Length: 590
Ligand code: AMP
Ligand code: MG
Image (cartoon, rainbow, N blue to C red; front, side):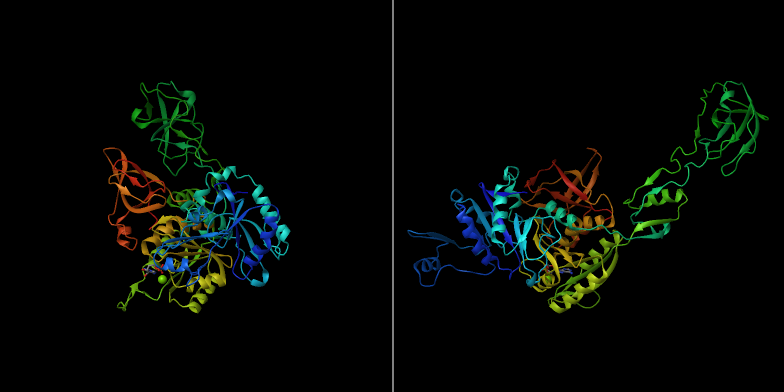
C-alpha cells in the first residue's frame, strides 16, 4: 500500500458522491479514532463560497476592512482565515497549514479528483458508479454491496471495520513514499505520465478480429501470428549472373557449357563432372551444381568456359532454399502494425488474407453554442469548428472508423442523447470543449449521470483540462476546446490509448533528442509542449530544433508549421541554445 504523508503525518481521504453521507460517517468515526489516542486533523473541501465568520463580529469587520489574513484567538481555539480571491489555494498548500507536530493523521473529505490515498464510500441506493474503477488512489472500500475487486472491502455500516482500515493504513510502511509525497500532491494534480498511465491501465484491448484481403490491410494490426508457409527463397538459386559448376570440379582448367538457365525456368537433368551451365541471378541451381562463378571472371570460347586466376570457393554466390526464412518459422507476431514493408513481406509468402484486429469505431463530436460548421457565413459571436476536423484526421491516420456526431449545442438533453448513441455504437468517444473549470456544466452533468468520468487537470501546457472515463464500458475522452490543446492532448493521451486498444505493442509516442537552436522558456513544474521545427544539421550531424514562433494555444497555424512537438520536462525552466531537448516528431500523425 502506498502511504502519503506531509511532514510525517499520514493523509487519508474519504471519497464518495454527494448523498453518500461522508460527513455523517466521519462524525461517527472520529470518536473511535480519538479514543485510540489518535490526534486527527480534518481537511474539508467546500465547493461553494463559505464563511465561518458572522457579519458584525470584530473579525468579520476587520476582514472586510482589508485584512487578507485574519487570525482570531482565544483561550480555547484559534482560527486563521485567509482570503484567496485570485485562485483557490492548492491542496498541498492547505495541508501545510496544519500544525503537524500535533497530529497523527489528516483525514480529507472531498478533493475527489486529487491524487492521494482514499477510502471509497458507496451506498447502492445513491445509484452512483464506482470510483475505484477509474481511480487507483482508492485503497479500500466501505459499501453495502459486493464490488468485484481485490481491494479490501468492508460494510459501510460497520464503523469498527472502517476504523480498522484507517489503522491498517497508519501502520503501513511510509518510507518508500515519503520522498515523493509532494509530487503526487502537486496542485496541478496529474503529470503527463501519470495521466497516460491511468488511461492505459483503464483501456481494454479490442478482442474482436476479422479477416481482410491483404490489399485492405495497410494500417491494420495483426490479430494472430504469421508463420511462413514456405521456404524463402523457395529453391536454391544463383545470386549472380555467371556459370554454375560442381564444387568437386574447382581447379579444373575449363568446362563444357551444356546449357543456360534463366530466372523463372529450370534445368532438366544433372550437371556432370567437367560441365558448367550459364545461369542468371535468381535462376534455380541445376541439380549437382552448388557453386557460381560470376560472369565477369569467365572467358568463353565456342562451347567452353574457363575462369583464369579467379579464386573459387565451393558454395559461393548461391542462395540456399529457406536461407532467409525456413518454412514454419515465425515472421510476424500478433500486434504488429501492417505498414508497407510488412504488407510486401506477407505478400512474398503467398498470403493474401490476414486476420486483423477489428477496426476501432470512434464517435466524435464538438460542443459549444459558439461553434459553427464551416460552409456558411459566420454568425455573430461564433467560431468555425476546427477540432472535429483535426480529431477525425488524426483518427484516420491511426486507422480508425469514424462516427461523426457533428456539433452539439450546450444543451443537456441533446448532449445526453449523443452520449448514449455514441456509447451504443462506438468503441470510443471523443469530444472537445466544455471540460475546463468555469465551463458551463452541461457536459459534466451528463457525464456524471450517464457514466463514470473524471475531470483532471494535467500538469502540462497546452492541454491542462482533460476528462477521461467510461460511458458504459466505452472509453470517453473530453479534450479541451482549444484547437492546439486538442491536438497536443490527442497525441499524448488518445493516441496511446487507441494503439493499446488496437493491440499495438509500442503505444507511447516516439521521442528523440535535438539541439535547441534558440533558447526555450518553460514554467518549472509542468510539461511544456511547444510547436517546433526540427531539421538535420549537416555541420554537427545532429538534429536541431527551433519553435514555430508565437505559442498561443489557439493558433492552429503553429501546428501546421510544426514538424514536431518540443517537450520540456517539468524540472526544466530554460533550455539554452546548444542544449539538447526532447522532441516528438509529428510525421504520420497529423
Ligand atoms: P471550452 O473548453 O469549451 O471553454 O473551449 C475553449 C476554447 O476553445 C474556446 O475559445 C472555444 O470557443 C474553443 N473551441 C471549443 N470547441 C471548438 C471547436 N470545435 N473548434 C474550434 N475551437 C473550439
Ligand atoms: Mg465550450
